[in-house]
Length: 309
Figure 1 (cartoon, rainbow, N blue to C red):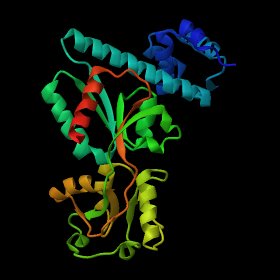
Figure 2 (figure 1 turned 135 degrees about the horizontal axis):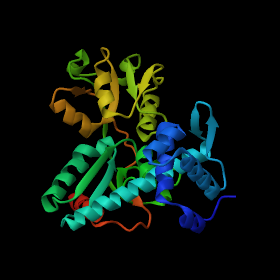
Figure 3 (figure 1 turned 135 degrees about the vertical axis):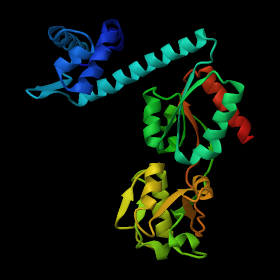
Figure 4 (figure 1 turned 180 degrees about the horizontal axis):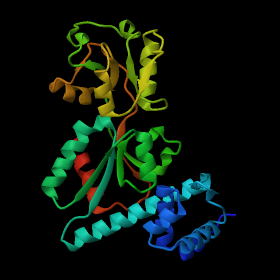
C-alpha cells in the first residue's frame, strides 16, 4: 500500500531527493554517495528510508550497479520535478531580492515560434527586462508532460492531444496553415506546378505517429488517393528536418507555413506549390487547470491576448 501524502511530506528530506537523482545519474551506490557527500553505509540507510517511505522497492540491485524499476522511475521523475521547482523558487527569490521580476519557463510547438513566441518575448523584454526566461521547443505531447511535472509554467501547444485535456486551462491562439517543403537548393524548389501524387515515391520526413501533424499528413495522402510513404524518417525536430532535407534529392517534409516561410526567406528551404486546404487543431496557451499563475506568466498571457485582439 502506498504511503499517504501527509506521511511522505513528514518524512521526505532534501537529501532523499538528491540521492534519488544521483542514483539515477550514476547507477552506483558508491558514486551516488560521493555526489551527495554521504558515506556508503549512510547512503544505503537513506535508500532504505526512501523505499520504506513509499512502501515499495524502487531499485533492482545487481553486481553491476543499481537500476530503478517502474516505481523507481516514477519517483525519480517527480524527484527531478521537485528539484526543478526548488531551483525555480531560489532563482525567483534571488530575482525579487535584486529588484527583478521572477522567472518564466515556457514551452512552444514549432509553428508558434515565429508568429507568437518570438515577438511576445521581445515585447516582454521591452516592458519587463528583469524577467528570466527559459524556452523549450518540442511537440505538444512532451511539452504537456513537462507542464504536468511543473517543469514548465505554460505551453503554447495543443492540449487536445492529451489523454486528459480537461487538466488544462486553454486559450486558443491560431489554427495554423501547413505546406510541403523541399531543400532550397533542390531542383523541385524551382517547380511551378507539382501534385502530391507525383511525390509519393520521394524520400519523406514525417512527424511521429500520434502527433496532430502526422494525422493531418495521413489525411492529405488519403485525400489524394495516394498510399502513405513506405520509407520515411520520423522526427518533430526543426533542425533535424532542415538537415535531413539536404540528405538526398527530392526529400519532402510537411511543416507549418509560417515556419517554412521564415526559412525560405533565408534560402534554406522552398515551399512547394501544393495548396493544402486542411487545417489541424488550434494551438494556444495551456496552463495547469486552476493553478495560481505567477506575474510573468500573467504578463505573457496578457501580451498574447493583446496581439490576438
